[in-house]
Amino acid sequence: MCFIVYDSFDTVYKLSWTQHHHHHSTSAHSVCGLNDNVPTPLLPRPSAIMASRSLARPLLRAAKCTHAARFSTSPSLLAASPSPARYVSQAAKPAPARSTAAAKASTSPAGPTSTAPPTQTAPPAPAPTAAHPPPPPPSSIPTIDWSTSYHGLSTAAFPPEVAAHLTTPISPADIEVKPDGIIYLPEIKYRRILNAALGPAGWGLVPRGPPVVADRTVTREYALVAQGRFIAQAQGENQFFAAEALPAAVEGCKSNALMRCCKDIGVASELWDPVFIRAFQKQHAEQVWVEHVVTKKKKQLWVKKGLSVGYPYKKT
Image (cartoon, rainbow, N blue to C red; front, side, top):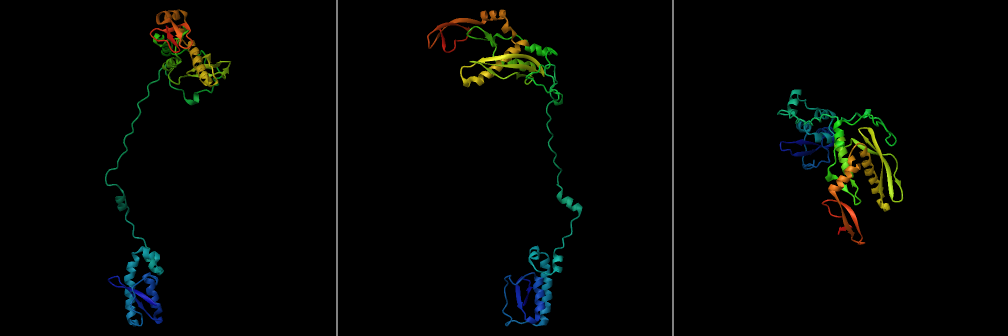
């Protein structure tokens, strides 16, 4: 059996003992926290060096004192060693905690704390006017089936500023002329007038039935709803010449119904006035002779002054 002694140069010496000193070598081996599997430099065998019992006792005490100090400061050795419980408890004892003031001083920042940048507030919303009233709260909006309802019909007139937008005379530059002499306003300009008067989303078209497809004509009924009230109802129609053109024809029904509904609230109403129609044709339109570029047939067509004849015709 054996025990381990550390000198000032951290050299490990392994001394062998006889079976008579078994209890001394076991204590030294446990105190050191090492086992026989750890490679250490060996002295010559016990046959070469022998120590007396009187010499072993002071060496054993020195080994305990020297290695216990190192063992208590080495957690890795503490975890791996089979040392007695008294040394384990001494090594595992936690260090005294720092005072609360010192802990706060070490964790608190040295400089002043940074403050968050001020949030930018949105500009105040413009005050509602009679033309653009504030939207009602969701709880006050009634549930209405606009496919059949006439809710709000003629309950109140539009405010004066809304009526002024709707009944503004149409500029002659916005009016177009069909080849047969009929004057009209493009559908997109009806929508612009309604947006200027009621605001975007202040009005809408509601289907009042499914599309009805005839031989080459499709029709559908729509209702104009503005500011939560029923305003007008009209039948929209459009022609198509192929099955793949049916979706576009149904969309054309919507625009045609919008034009007819706007007639009830005074939008571009002069386009149905015969006096205005004749005056416009005389001042802003003319009849010209044209020739079909394929069939070579000639006919008279109405065109707006200053515009050329479109394909497949050419002016003769």
